[in-house]
Length: 91
Image (cartoon, rainbow, N blue to C red; front, top):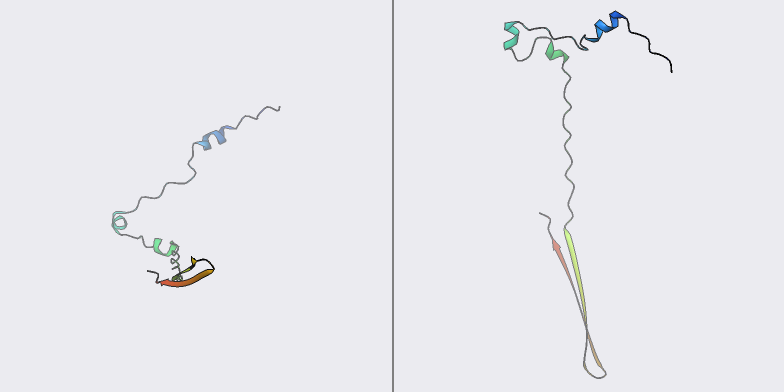
């Protein structure tokens, strides 16, 4: 493997430097105000929240079908069919 090159003294001094400069201290008059004079123009406008459209809720439909087969006597068969549908409104 190749040996690493030694860093120059300039680079070593720069390593301690901060990536982002410190913000300037505001004057007393500006500190009291909520928004600095130029800051209002620089701020990005926030996107308006998108309202979700209310989905139509279909009413619940329940159907019950009952079929009863009876044989009360030999060779006699009785068949009874009942069908009921219930519609419940969604709340």
